[in-house]
Image 1 (cartoon, rainbow, N blue to C red):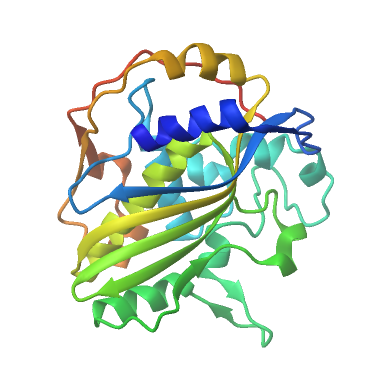
Image 2 (cartoon, rainbow, N blue to C red):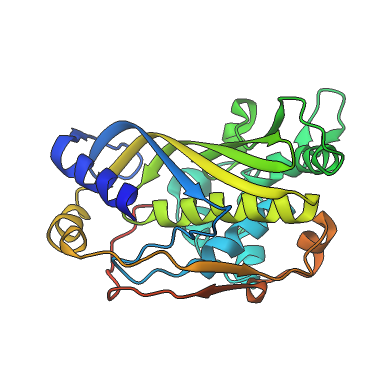
Length: 283
């Protein structure tokens, strides 16, 4: 919570106004932020200065790991974050690559699980990483990336948190995640939950110990219509201690994640929080 609040205060104090052409709403912006999450000691980075809902963030991560490409698939597992980008984004609605209602195109997990190769076959990045890590192999390129410039026009949104690099030291697994753009009041809590859970899950299914997750953000911003709530409400609240995340120990393989795991397999203990804040969402 300390590092989260310090980033929010830094944006309020030092941010520059930047026009955002996609949303039409100005952003107060800083460049470069580094956060880290202590997965080894189970310090779950769930925001405590407002009520936050972790299960939708985990559901979205599960959809990415399964390679989902449709908002209806995400809704079915408890995540509604793709409804607007799939169905209300004007540029995507007019895109000839869009297949119809709820289609997201070749975004996020589609790239992670079926990256198109020049010979017409696909590459499953995630499967390669899991197979290596289970054997104790770190080739210094255990990289899961959703960022494919050659197919940007084939999806409804360029990935924000776009690349995850896994590093193995002995029997301890570390994660470094890179994010090009971050809506701090709304998106960051989702993103930091996903970094934490991704490392915890990968360590569990690969038979390793989790270490720390390092989260690098390039452009961190607060939208103009979010600023008053952040400055005058959330930043005036005292944070509580971080809760703990309990993951079902029966999750043992990538196939488990692909087939039967749900958000009910993740529970939080000791979560204290202030009342919710309804920040506006920019599409």
